[in-house]
Image 1 (cartoon, helix red, strand yellow):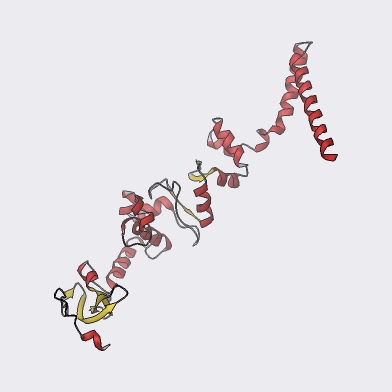
Image 2 (image 1 turned 180 degrees about the vertical axis):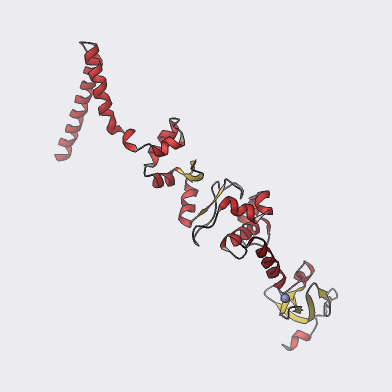
Length: 266
Ligand SMILES: [Zn+2]
C-alpha cells in the first residue's frame, strides 16, 4: 500500500495524476502490476467506480471503467431488442475473433485471414436474419467451409458434435435451404450416406436423391429387373443367349458361395 505513493524515478516516467481520459480521472500512481511490472494508475470513473488501469490502456483509448461500453450496448439494445441475447454475443464474439488482435482466438481466425462479410459486420440485424435464432444454448456459429469467411451461405448454428463432423466431412449439400454434409443428411432423411453420394454422382437432383426411398434404388430390385429382362428375351428369341449366360453366372456364384461355406465349416 505504502509504495503506491512512491513514484518511480525513471527519467521517462510521466506522472499522470490529475489527468483526464474521457470519463476517467487519474487519482494516483497505483504501483506496478503483474510479471511485466506494468505501472498502474488508480482512476475514478465519472460513474463512481474506481479501477487501476495501465498507462498503456489510458493512452490507447480506455475512456471509462467499462460503463461506457455497457451503455452503448444497451443503446443498441433499444434499436433491435436483441443485444445481450445469445445471438448478439455470438455476433460480437465473431467480429472480435476476426478483428481484435487482443482476442485470445484471433490467431485462429483473423490471424489466418478469416473475416466477416461486410453485410454481417455492419449489421447485427442482417446477421440475425440470415442465421435465424440460435436453436439451443449449445449451438455455436459454424463455418461450413472451415477456411471460408463468416458470411451468409457459409455459416449455420451447430453443436460441437456437428462441428466436429463437419470438419471431417468434405461434401456439402444444400437441401431445403440448409447446408449440411452428406453424412448428416443421411441421418436426416434416413438414407445411407453412400446411397446419397452415389445418386448425386450419377447426376440426380438433390431433391430426388434425398426423397427417393432406398428400395427403389438398391440392389434388392435388381433380381426383379433381371426377371423382366429374361422374360422379354425368352419371348423374343428362342435361343435366349443372354438368359443362359445370366443363369450360368448365377450358378457359378452359387458354387463359389457354397465352396466358401464348406471351407468355413471345415
Ligand atoms: Zn464508469
